[in-house]
Amino acid sequence: MDKTLEAVVNRHLAAENAHQMEETLAALHPDCLFEDLPLGKTYRGRPGAERYYRFWWGAFDLEVKGEHRHWSEDGAFMIAQTWYEGVHRGQFLDYAPTDRPIRFPLAVRDTVPRRSDGRRTLLLRSRHSAQTDRRHATP
Image (cartoon, rainbow, N blue to C red; front, side, top):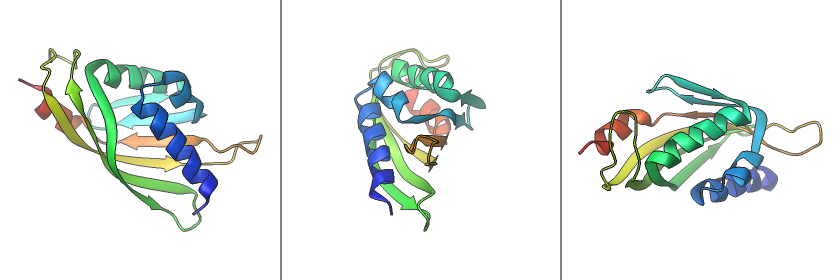
């Protein structure tokens, strides 16, 4: 596995866990795609990714925890089995904040292509998480 690819993912994850929007978005490919399958929402490009993060960070004080990464043999993509952990602090869909701790599973698929300038960026993130969010976010 290419250490450069791992560094891109680690840098992105550190920024995401610190809720640093500019740094989180910087690791993403301009054409990235976030799919929240249980909610039926799709977010395209960095502006879409920003909406995705604002939606989740506004409702939950979240961090990605316990990541298990599985890389393809050629290092072109990674699947991570992990979970979000935090506290329900803001409005989530129809649910008012509960200030309760939450923990729910998350699956992520990252493709890390080489851009024309030679940099690596995260292209595709498919997250499966919201089904459990609803159960843990309610009072």
